[in-house]
Length: 104
Image (cartoon, rainbow, N blue to C red):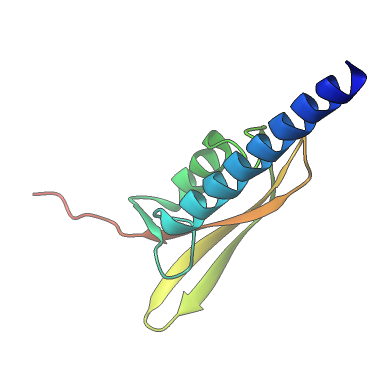
């Protein structure tokens, strides 16, 4: 019976790791997950709350802000919010493009 419990636990661990890998791929493919696909915001003051509102792509834990930097990319000025997960210690960078909209 011990062997069966171990096999079940290992199967559950493999399934959890596969799910984590899929969530990480989804993070990088979504807006804000890479420098080539920044998330568009109206104000730089929204960068930090938006970066911290999302859970860790790997484990779903809460993120802590490490830094918020302005990065030039061509003619655009992007914002990079570096975060670290409080549970698994994975580090992530979310990318933002601040575009102020003119009033109508």
